[in-house]
Image 1: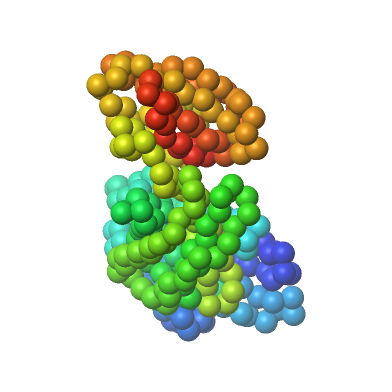
Image 2: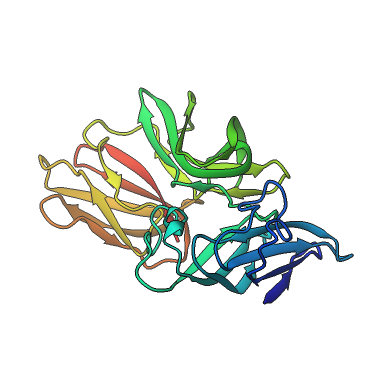
Length: 298
């Protein structure tokens, strides 16, 4: 077994159990409230007085063992262990390292909310400009105790303001699609993120994205392939009717970081050797038209 203490003084213990008592560890509403298989991993929470607050089993038709436990700064829990159950193939999250069980015994890492439930599993936030409006979309693959999503926006990726709210599905094991429209995005660009809020008040943020509202008609189809990204910024959809374009990169207070030229017939990758943060990339054509593309370097 292994244990840990969160920043509120609660004690968490993970381990393995082969007791067939059924509900001796788990609590109502947890991820798996009933014992299953020949051995299950478990996670249980006690308060500072040693009183059980919540607990869950984690197991399929075979043997599961819980070996390791970690707690992050937001009190989310991560359990590492091993499994030889083929019935657990529904557990891996979309896009995870190994989405299906192999043969024999596999290792696993699973994240839980503080109450022993799976947290909300969601796709990255996406956004597009539609007739001057900003349309945001995201998808959840599972939800546990999800009160809803608070949509926030910012002009500088630092100071955020609430601009809307969408109720969640509470508890769900099916795919749910969410969409939000901001009818008055900021000029020339707006940063967006959502704040996912649980019923108990705990929350987490999505990775911010940036949308440009106004652009020169010749350059309006341009976009950054990966944003947020790293040192290498790939500009896509530069018009081929004009071979060369100038670019300049500034930080959010207007200081020039880098400038140069792009050729639409060659590779359109800019190398940005600068600290992590938010930047503005302006691409200019020979007629003075431009597009401003916000960029977040991780």
